[in-house]
Amino acid sequence: MKVTGKLITSALFVIVLTLHGCAPPPGQSGMETFGRGVAGLVLSPLMIIVGLAQGLAFLPYTVGAVPYAWAGGAKINVTVGARRRRAPTHG
Image (cartoon, rainbow, N blue to C red; front, side, top):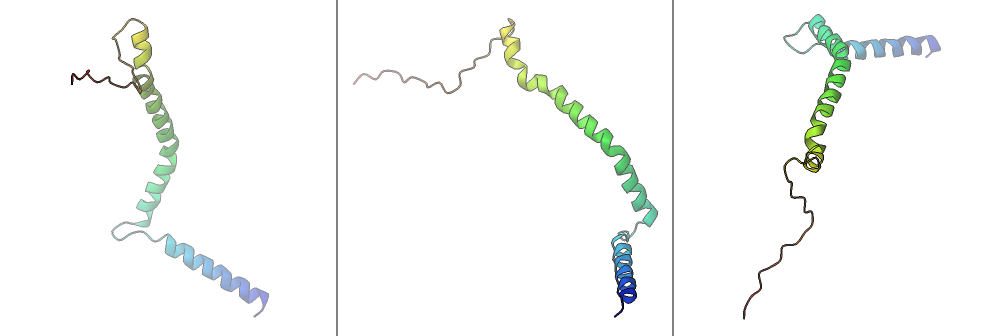
């Protein structure tokens, strides 16, 4: 097989696989699938920014409880790893 024949066969193989992979699911048109993909690409940076903002907004709830107690707020019992003492038994 000549180089040109191999090149044409390879190109047809790639084109057929690409077109088969781009086939829409049953009940959807190709343009609808394409539109959803473009919308996802356009909205993905916005979703990343919103996720970061949500994480930053939640940060004071996870870290800010102890500084609130230090500032004279509610007393928080922070005894990590402390053992409870047993009552003395009389025997």
